[in-house]
Image 1 (tube, rainbow, N blue to C red):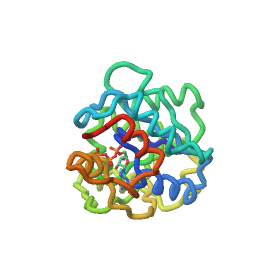
Image 2 (cartoon, rainbow, N blue to C red):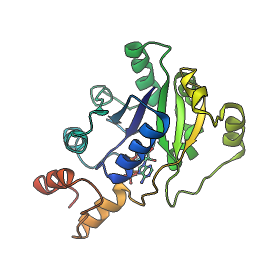
Image 3 (cartoon, rainbow, N blue to C red):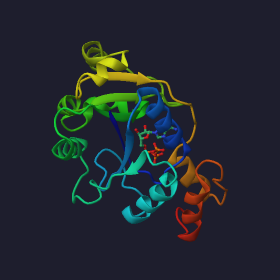
Length: 209
Ligand code: ATP
């Protein structure tokens, strides 16, 4: 199974990296592909350029060979729709391979508002990572979706290319890119919230000041 982790990564931080590793271990993933978005469709646009967000990811992932950067959204003009990304991944990987889309609880809460959300679930499993301060919001529609697609068995994920929703326990790290940008904006150090290699780039490029 391959894990797919989409985000702005503006910047990447330990709240992405450790939960991704927990998913890799917990689900027995072969690899996790980090997929930085180009043009956001559900949120404000990223502050750092695509090239710098990619450079920060490269710097964060270089010593874990099972973590790889996948630039297909950066290479595609226009809004970065997850459905299009999964469609393109299916062209590369075929229709049978189980794919696990890793999402934080905050992203899951709005999943049904995503463009072609049910088609997304047809193309990949949804693996939800609990996140500190993000209450497990569940409205009636999301609850109904979980009743139909929820699974507590990894074997069920391995046995199908997609279509299941699985809650993965991950290390709870109260870190967000918003907080990091905010600290820097206030002249405070964001040290120890991300790898030093990422911080070096932020300093060198005077990002988020
Ligand atoms: P921002 O604060 O700018 O919104 P972010 O820290 O949430 O950024 P993103 O790149 O937008 O980071 O997030 C990508 C994915 O990672 C989302 O699914 C999000 O829920 C998840 N994620 C981010 N931080 C954490 C965390 N600390 N724990 C678990 N999941 C997280």
